[in-house]
Image (cartoon, rainbow, N blue to C red):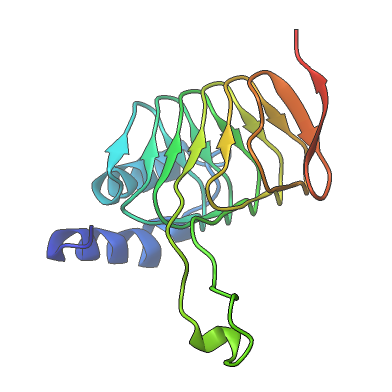
Length: 171
């Protein structure tokens, strides 16, 4: 996961490249973030866009032509397919605090199991969406802005709301 080289790449990305302007204003900024981002993540496809101030860990795998939105935060093992669009401030969690004991505070109970998140190909994730641990979002889905995705979303579905519910199927 974190070796010495990845730590250096991480520092270069977060303290230099992430401060460059948004990609739509400066293509060179997109290229610099992609250069450093590819050195951090587990797998990285072609023409991936790591947007300004996005945050991610080395467990990320991201497919060709996909993008991580401005100020998005992706923690833990997450697989993002090809041609995925992501809005601003999306949060993807892969773990949570334990809460099964009532005799000690939750903050002292540690973290639960890591549950990877999988996002299929050709998915559009709106701004400020929150995706919880263990969720799979199928190919061709649209997740409406502000949704909280607590369970799997079947392929070619449109899901909105808190918690996210499928409101229609595409095609």
